Image (cartoon, rainbow, N blue to C red):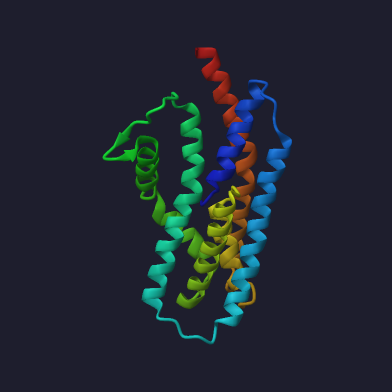
Length: 217
């Protein structure tokens, strides 16, 4: 099932911090969730608007879909890669001269390789879940991807941490919301349940791993 790595990372950090007695900055947590709520609502409205305004325009499917896919992949990496780099940088030894490989900063390269390899693991089933949750035509998929890309670009530019997976789902829902039979309620509900379950599960795992590692060390 598709889940939000942003939610998972956030809740795991809060769980570990809770164990160590770290002072939780509730203002920051509220801000993060506000950004996620804002991005979900924005992409829903934008996707709905684009699908209504542009539905009469016949798109060159293959070329437009290729552009949308490349743009969405790039912006997804920008948004999610920045979160991993932040954690990586926090844990890495500080030095005035950061190490590099082939002229590329080591943390960026390492995170990029892991994101690239991870995309191949169980990706077929995850993509299938996304496609099955909202059934769209090729043109409608372009509208959803373009709306998602716009929101990702805007939020990344403004420094808003958001969930790319959630934005993608709401982009598809925005296009299919007025299309009869487009939304598979069973799968869509499963995706929502998985996202909600991420909060307590990752909080508990973060707390538990902090406990175990502290005991071992």
